Length: 79
Image (tube, rainbow, N blue to C red; front, side):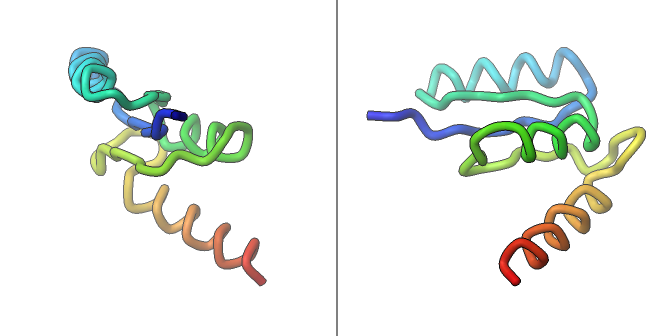
């Protein structure tokens, strides 16, 4: 059975490692990104995750901006 993929977007390395470890131990495949821009690139380049765990307060592109871009992209792709 294929593992469910979770994308974790977190700029704090310690928090990222902790969240990743918990999810891996729970049986998920985990992909990570440090910034919203990195996460957008991963969404375009790899298999879509089933879940995104997103730090809302981020440098470069905050979580709200990330969600706005992702939602707009999905609306355009569905048209």
